Amino acid sequence: MGYHEEVAELDFVSMYPTIMVEHNVSPETVNCRCCRNDRVPELHYTICERREGIVPATLRTVVQKRAMYKGEKKRLKRLGDERWETLRSQTERPQMDARDLFRIPRVQECTVRAH
Image (tube, rainbow, N blue to C red; front, side):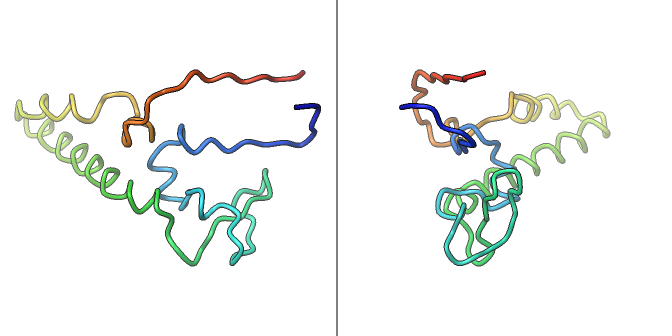
């Protein structure tokens, strides 16, 4: 409570899985004690370069499978194979977020912004 300046929030739950995998974003890798880098310069955050976080390690397989399905869908469509329609339903849904992957129930979100 109260007035705070230069406060930032990093919401891990709503980040896209691909970004989390590519940049090693996970609660235990952000601002780790072992690395001093400026991977998130706007927030002056560091990201661990020595170990992979549990979130990227868990999401990597999901992200790779999705990329594989998208590639196969393109190939089948180019060949005129009707099976590409089946893959379309699996790859063209809106980008899933971490809540979808871990089936975390959505809670009411409230943000208060001061102008």
